[in-house]
Amino acid sequence: MLKNTVPAPDVIVDFVFEDGLFFLTVSNIGPEPAERVHTAFDPHFRGLGGGVSISDLPLFRNIEFLAPARSIRTLLDSAAAYFARREPERITVNISFADRAGRNYKSAIRHDLSIYRDLAFVPKK
Image (tube, rainbow, N blue to C red; front, side, top):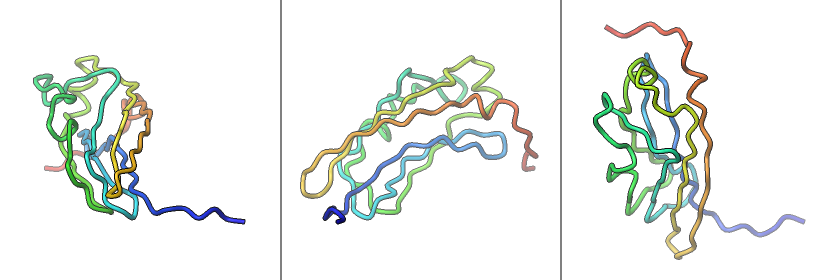
């Protein structure tokens, strides 16, 4: 017998490699809105030429409302610059959020950026 499950938000943070650039996306892949989305990175790392602590960006500290099937995407850095600075390659993203009924959720996603180190790509002009 199947359990009666309540539809819930499902927030993920993903690293996207595209044309030699790294982007970070915060996405609600669930069928319900997410509220009070908070993200913490372990270890901390820097982006945009090393000048920005990603953990300090408001995008990752608090999103009051994230609709279902919505994503927010930001540029992290070029992959070449990120790896040249010897930024962390293994990063755990800890995500907490709530649904509209006030139920709290937590998840952790592990990423290994080293898989992108030797990818070939054709840069856009």
